[in-house]
Image (cartoon, rainbow, N blue to C red; front, top):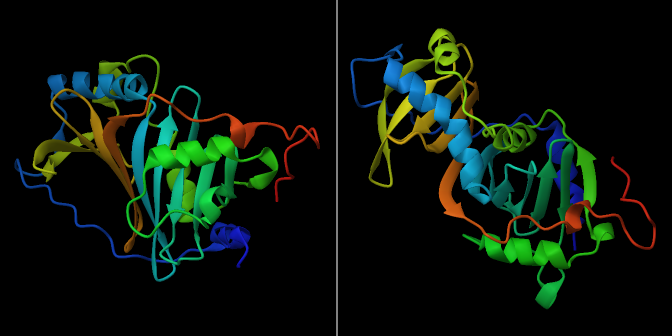
Length: 250
C-alpha cells in the first residue's frame, strides 16, 4: 500500500484545473454596493459563525485534476475534519486542519483505506477521526499549494460579531451580478481588489466563495448550510498518551 504521506507532495504543486464558469446573470454589470447590501454583507461573517459547525466542500486544483475535500468546519474553534479525495484510489483518507497546518490519516475501521469513491458522509469522517490515536495523524505546516490556500480560506469566513457596514461600503467591494446554485438565487460580490468572489443570499448567508489563483486555476469553497451537531473531534490535535507529544511537523 502506498504511504498516505504522498499527500505531502501537494505542498509543492502548482497544477491547473478547469476553472468553473462565473455566471453573473442579473443586473447591468459590476456596480458599487447599495446601503442595504453593505448591511447584509456586514452580517455574513456572524451568520457563518452562528451556523457552525457545518459541512463544507472544497475543490482545489492539482496537476491534471482536482482535490475534493468534504468536511465539517467549526468556525468557533478554527478546526475542521473531513475526507480528502484526489481522484486516485490510493490518495483518499482523513484530513484535519486548523490555523497552523494540516494532518492526514488512514481510518482503520473495517479494513478501509479511506472513503469510497464518490460522495462520503462527513459524519463518518468525524466518527473515524475520533477513533484514531494521535500517532495515526501525519502533520505538516501549510505550504504554497492551492489546497493549503483553500483550507486556510475555510477558517477565515466567520466572526463572532457583525462587521461595520460603513467600512464595507468604503472598502471597494462591488456587486457583480446574480447567480443560481441548486435553484436558489444569490448575489455575487467582489472583495475590493482581491481575487475572491462571494455568493450570498438575501438573508446574508454565505453559500460559496471562489478564489481565482490565475487565468486557469480556481479554488471553490461551498458552504452547504448543513449543521453538524457532533462538531469536530479532539483526537487529531490530542497528544499521544504514550509519547506525550504529537508527531513532528515536517
